[in-house]
Image (tube, rainbow, N blue to C red; front, side, top):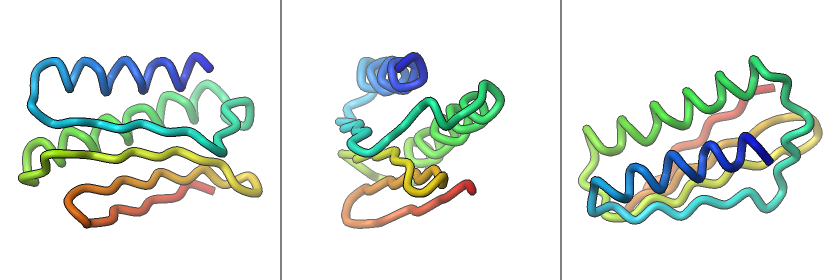
Amino acid sequence: MIFEHAIKDLTEEIQAITPIMIHFTTANFNEELLNDNLRLMLYRIVQEQVNNILKHAAASEIILNLETNHGVVWSLVWLKGTLSLSNWG
Protein backbone atom coordinates (compact mmCIF):
# COMPACT_ATOMS: atom_id res chain seq x y z
CA MET A 1 0.00 0.00 0.00
CA ILE A 2 2.99 2.34 0.32
CA PHE A 3 3.31 2.60 -3.46
CA GLU A 4 -0.41 3.26 -3.91
CA HIS A 5 -0.23 6.03 -1.28
CA ALA A 6 2.75 7.59 -3.06
CA ILE A 7 0.83 7.72 -6.36
CA LYS A 8 -2.26 9.07 -4.57
CA ASP A 9 -0.11 11.80 -2.96
CA LEU A 10 1.32 12.66 -6.39
CA THR A 11 -2.14 13.03 -7.90
CA GLU A 12 -3.31 15.18 -4.99
CA GLU A 13 -0.26 17.46 -5.31
CA ILE A 14 -0.95 17.93 -9.03
CA GLN A 15 -4.64 18.61 -8.43
CA ALA A 16 -3.71 21.26 -5.86
CA ILE A 17 -1.80 23.32 -8.46
CA THR A 18 -3.75 22.60 -11.66
CA PRO A 19 -7.43 22.62 -12.64
CA ILE A 20 -7.15 19.00 -13.82
CA MET A 21 -9.19 16.36 -11.99
CA ILE A 22 -7.29 13.09 -11.55
CA HIS A 23 -9.05 9.83 -10.70
CA PHE A 24 -6.69 7.10 -9.50
CA THR A 25 -7.79 3.46 -9.17
CA THR A 26 -6.06 0.19 -8.33
CA ALA A 27 -8.92 -2.31 -8.49
CA ASN A 28 -6.77 -5.33 -9.44
CA PHE A 29 -3.34 -4.18 -8.29
CA ASN A 30 -1.05 -6.39 -6.19
CA GLU A 31 1.77 -4.19 -4.95
CA GLU A 32 3.54 -7.19 -3.41
CA LEU A 33 4.49 -8.37 -6.92
CA LEU A 34 6.78 -5.33 -7.27
CA ASN A 35 10.27 -5.12 -5.85
CA ASP A 36 11.60 -1.73 -4.69
CA ASN A 37 13.33 -0.97 -8.00
CA LEU A 38 10.20 -1.74 -10.01
CA ARG A 39 8.11 0.41 -7.66
CA LEU A 40 10.45 3.35 -8.18
CA MET A 41 10.51 2.87 -11.96
CA LEU A 42 6.73 2.59 -12.13
CA TYR A 43 6.32 5.71 -9.96
CA ARG A 44 8.62 7.65 -12.30
CA ILE A 45 6.76 6.37 -15.37
CA VAL A 46 3.40 7.43 -13.93
CA GLN A 47 4.91 10.77 -12.95
CA GLU A 48 6.24 11.27 -16.49
CA GLN A 49 2.91 10.25 -18.06
CA VAL A 50 1.05 12.82 -15.97
CA ASN A 51 3.69 15.51 -16.61
CA ASN A 52 3.45 14.90 -20.36
CA ILE A 53 -0.32 15.21 -20.19
CA LEU A 54 0.03 18.50 -18.34
CA LYS A 55 2.53 19.82 -20.90
CA HIS A 56 1.09 18.52 -24.15
CA ALA A 57 -2.63 17.84 -23.75
CA ALA A 58 -5.55 20.09 -23.11
CA ALA A 59 -7.05 17.56 -20.72
CA SER A 60 -9.47 18.58 -18.04
CA GLU A 61 -9.62 15.12 -16.51
CA ILE A 62 -7.26 12.15 -16.19
CA ILE A 63 -8.23 8.63 -15.23
CA LEU A 64 -5.22 6.60 -14.06
CA ASN A 65 -5.62 2.89 -13.42
CA LEU A 66 -2.88 0.52 -12.26
CA GLU A 67 -3.43 -3.21 -12.25
CA THR A 68 -1.54 -6.48 -12.22
CA ASN A 69 -2.64 -9.46 -14.25
CA HIS A 70 -0.73 -12.76 -14.44
CA GLY A 71 2.48 -11.10 -13.26
CA VAL A 72 2.22 -8.15 -15.66
CA VAL A 73 1.81 -4.56 -14.43
CA TRP A 74 -0.55 -2.40 -16.50
CA SER A 75 -0.89 1.36 -16.47
CA LEU A 76 -4.00 2.66 -18.20
CA VAL A 77 -4.37 6.40 -18.65
CA TRP A 78 -7.46 7.99 -20.16
CA LEU A 79 -7.85 11.66 -21.02
CA LYS A 80 -10.54 13.27 -23.13
CA GLY A 81 -11.44 9.96 -24.75
CA THR A 82 -7.81 9.09 -25.58
CA LEU A 83 -6.17 5.94 -24.25
CA SER A 84 -2.48 5.63 -23.42
CA LEU A 85 -1.56 2.02 -22.73
CA SER A 86 1.73 0.75 -21.30
CA ASN A 87 2.75 -2.57 -19.84
CA TRP A 88 5.83 -3.86 -18.09
CA GLY A 89 6.30 -7.63 -17.93
